[in-house]
Length: 342
Ligand code: NAI
Image (cartoon, rainbow, N blue to C red; front, side):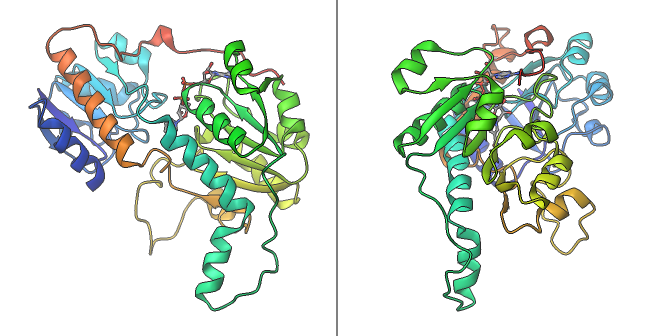
């Protein structure tokens, strides 16, 4: 099938071309993100392939539908960038990659915790400047600390296991707690407010839904222990970034590790060096010595890219052959959980 692949970088292209040797689709790569402005590029293609910072809203979908697109195959687990109701109305089907490597994302979350706690970024720049002093680089032992894992799906579970391996107590919060997992791993499900107030480290692994948007707001941050390390590899809007700035400026937060950012669309995945950064909140976040931002790279391992390519191309093949699409997402499936209890 002819597939228009948007927001492609070298690493996507390599993985998709390699996997496509087994599928034989005709792939056309476009560098720009899929938005209302770029959607006309897909005219005449029955299927498009999108990524997390594309804007597949109702207006974009209307242009795609007029151009003959019948399938949006997103190369991501999250699908909050696609308006599922509009897609259904326009008879466009949507498929995703529900699991590609929970290890990649969980390991990146742990990397952020370790790097922040042991000040690795600062230490790296210091020694390259022949500054071998240790002042300001004191961290803490993770062993014996309490880690709060918010969301115990595929990724949260792997993160919880790693933290247990470090000898941490792990508190979990999920709308659907799993008693067997709790027993097996020796973790404890608690209400969200208890997780916030008792944890030394907090890692977010829930999807972005109306119920989870800004689950970390000013009130939640105030409830957290002074010195807490907060890590977000879920979606940017789980955290109210302005409230986060406040908690960082007051010194309440020990550190923030952000692989995702509320307004990352149009910024992350791009080389903007040499340009003036227009996002004042992000610019301010980047000034703190105890903030580590990565550009939505938690998924970026060889294993994950290979699995993403395989599943995406298999989704397209199922669609092409009129087979049931195992990884289809439909509007009624979206979990409209109530605002997380605090
Ligand atoms: P999953 O679907 O396996 O797990 C999500 C968990 O969150 C489930 O256990 C669910 O019950 C829980 N949940 C949903 N709504 C909730 C609420 N309101 N309150 C509490 N718990 C709630 O998803 P998975 O694979 O673990 O991924 C989690 C998220 O990580 C994805 O939705 C995606 O946004 C993000 N992600 C980020 C990546 C990155 O590169 N930074 C890569 C892959 C995923």
